[in-house]
Length: 173
Image (tube, rainbow, N blue to C red; front, top):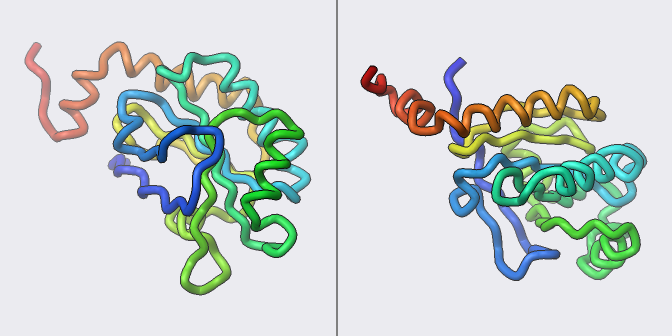
């Protein structure tokens, strides 16, 4: 399977970060992108708490957790920045959260559409080179996800070799 760059994020606003974040700016780190809606039961009970555990377990220089608030239903109830700020504050989610830009069709948010997400919660793993390596719709077991993150971290030890392979070059022996 040929690995391709993850699609860029289309974010209308950021919370819990002093500046906008991008895949390019985060290269060199593993990114855990947790797509959620604040009125999604699976997001509140599983996806977001798991994202919090990941953020607590790893240094952000190694593994960066990013929330993606991607509203595709009940927009009037959960689509405002004020409502999302209150939700993040009340549940004490302090990792950066981007608000997915609404699509031109008025239905699917742009980043959700670019990643062909089936719904929320969706967790996306992006490697140190900015390539999408895994995407899970619904819940994923902590142990399985930890193994996937561990495998990506092991690749970091041989990153120059990984970069050469990604460029189609073979490193010297």
